Image 1 (cartoon, helix red, strand yellow):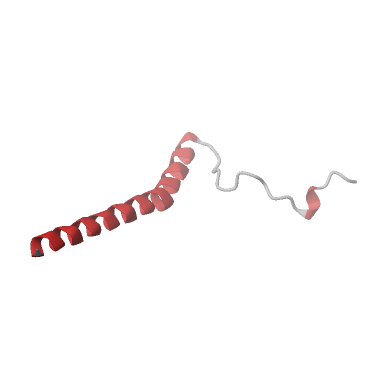
Image 2 (image 1 turned 30 degrees about the vertical axis):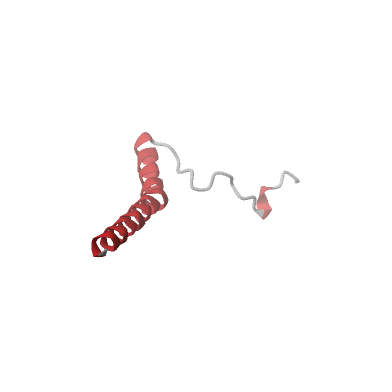
Length: 61
């Protein structure tokens, strides 16, 4: 019985570690790698896709 519970604890621990690794990979490493790749290609970063309008951006004279 002890071996069964030990293997269940090991499996749950591995699942948690794999989930944490994928979470960090998607949210921390991939955006940074995209910025590096864009910089190497000479592109501007897409961090803010849409420019926020300011008060002075009106077309009125």
